[in-house]
Structures are given as structure tokens and as C-alpha cells.
Image (tube, rainbow, N blue to C red; front, side, top):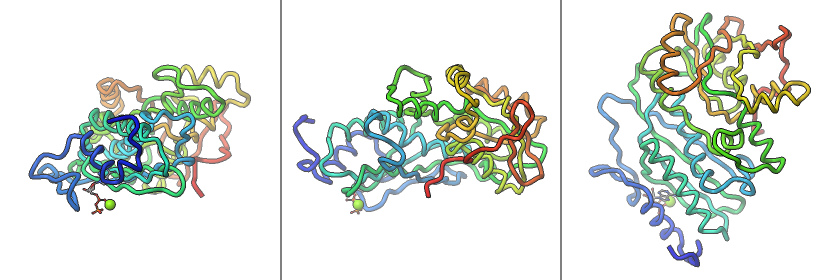
Length: 333
Ligand code: ADP
Ligand code: MG
């Protein structure tokens, strides 16, 4: 497309046409972009799992330090992470955009490029959406549809006292990355805290392997911080949990940063949010089989505590004292 064409010249339908052209469409007899509603057919015997996330400029992302292509990748990744948390396989997604005017068309194209990359990586087909103007910032709303059979879906409500509490990957990197971005640092390589903040990887393979192996009782993705999200599992399962902070998986870069802070930034690791790792509970007898799945998925899996019957989540510091968080996770209001 010519660089000088602006969004106002392209118009709503021109933009929708641009979007359609960038994404492979559902295969007939299914219908994607272009009719009044999409027509989709789940695989035989499968249930649909549907999840929506809204990303608002100024709340979820800052355009001054977020490369548009990574914003597109992240917008889909955070939705796919919800499907991972249920053990589902992604199939389709819907994309709704509210765009302020004027807005650089090139930036929209880069966001779409990032979305298309992430969609292709996870075999997720764009089946429709909505496009309108915005009187404030840019809004990106995505709805993903995935599938899994009813008996294999992993809910938040299945934890049982005595279960191990597991987490994948390392925690706190994304929160540290955001802190560094806000202090003026910029993207500096793969796997760094800043990369983990700007370009999170949804743990889809791990989620499905755990669900399909029937090894876990409950699962959630860590979007608001381990304390808050494990709290959701506990509330919905009618139990509590005891975490040992010394067992938390922390990256080398997080440890280097943390060693210079006083006190140690446990808060960042357990309540920083946007980790997009999985937290799940499972009977201790499944440990060896779960470590095998970790190897297969290429992810570190760590037991960080136990499910209890006490009804609350407690975290213990390495010296045995109870950790008192100043906030358990990000809340909007
Ligand atoms: P309606 O007026 O019936 O809502 P629209 O003109 O909004 O229809 O949309 C026309 C078609 O384009 C629909 O199939 C819709 O799903 C699709 N569409 C609109 N906006 C987007 C978008 N941002 N991403 C993907 N598909 C879109
Ligand atoms: Mg519409």
C-alpha cells in the first residue's frame, strides 16, 4: 500500500479490506470476514471455550515505548493465554478496533503484522470483528475461541487440599521489564525482562499437555500476579494455599536486579502481574509425570507451595516470617 494513503482516505471499509487481505480466512463452508456473522464449526465432540480481553491505550499499553508490531503480538497473546489456562486449543479470534483520528496508518499496519504473526504461530484464524473511531486512545478488543473436550477442560475450581501449587517459567520479569521501560530503557534482546513484558509467550502447549494428561486439578494463567491469581483458584475451589517465596522461580536478570534492592522485591515477583505463566495444582504423586511434561514443553516447572484447607493464601519469606503484600495484584478501580 502507498505510504501517503491515510486512514481517513482508506475509510472503515477500506481498512476492513486491508485486514481481510492480511489474514487467511476460514475455509468454506465456514464464513469469516465479510458477512453479517461468522459461521464456524467446532471439531466433533469438542466444546467451545470463549474469552475476551480489552487493551486500552494508557491503561494496558503506552505507545511511547511499545513497538506497534509487539503490541499486535501481545494483544493476541494475552487472549491465547486464557485458552492455555483452560487446556484448550485455539481455533478462531475476533478483532475489534477503536482508532482515534488522526492515527498513522503505518502503525495500524504494524499492529496487524504482529497480530498476523501471533495468529499464524498458534494456528488461530481471524473470523471477524468490528472497526470504529475512538474519542480517546486506541482500543484493541480481542475475543478468542478455542476447543477442548468437556472432561479435559481445566477449571479454577478443582484444587484439593494437599495438592502441590506449581508455576511455569519465571515470575516477576514482566513487572521488572515495565519498570525498566518506565525508567527509559528500551528493548534489548530476547528473553530479557523488557522482552517478557512487551512480547509474552502464551503457554498453550503446556496447558494442553497438562489437560490432556489429566495430571492437574485446577489451572489459571498469571495475569494479575501469583498471589491474586492463586487466590482465584483458592476462592473458587473453597480452599487456601501456603507459598514458600524462597522456592519462587526467578530469572538471572531478576535476581541481579533484586540483589541491589532493599528490601528484596518479593512484591514485584508475586504481585507484579502480566507474567502470563500458568499456575496449577496437582496431587504430589504426579510430580515426576509433570516434570516430564515440562521437559516436553521446554519450560521450567516449579512447586512453590501447597493447597491447604484454611481458606486463605499465605506466603512465607525465606526466614519463615509471613509476607505481608502491600497489594495482592493489579486492580482497575
Ligand atoms: P456490521 O455493520 O454488520 O457490523 P461491519 O461493516 O462492521 O458489519 O463488518 C463487516 C465485516 O467485516 C464483518 O464480517 C466483520 O466481522 C468484519 N470486520 C469488521 N471489522 C473488523 C476487524 N477489525 N477485524 C476483522 N474483521 C472485521
Ligand atoms: Mg460493525
